[in-house]
Image (tube, rainbow, N blue to C red; front, side, top):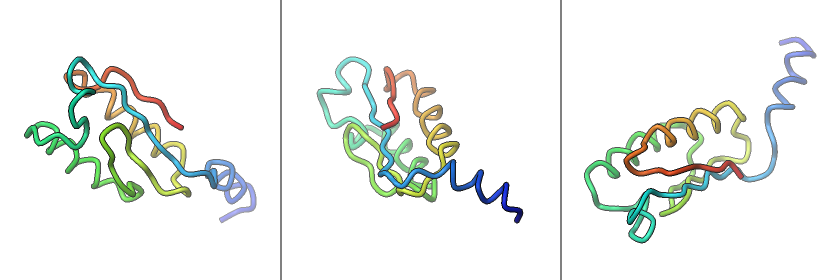
Length: 93
């Protein structure tokens, strides 16, 4: 690994905790959100926990490890945005 690639890797990693906040469609936000017992949401959770940096899932957010690279955050956020039946928008914090 060269010094330039090491520096690039360090730049991609922010020591702050990583969270993806989810805004839901319609009544989904008033319910249990990502912790709903709906079969589709349960399947979605199963997929989310396959990402190695996911720490925990709350009704309105997904928390990832502090060392998670930005591209992983972007990938998870894009995945959630594609769930248009559930998600209105996402925000990376």
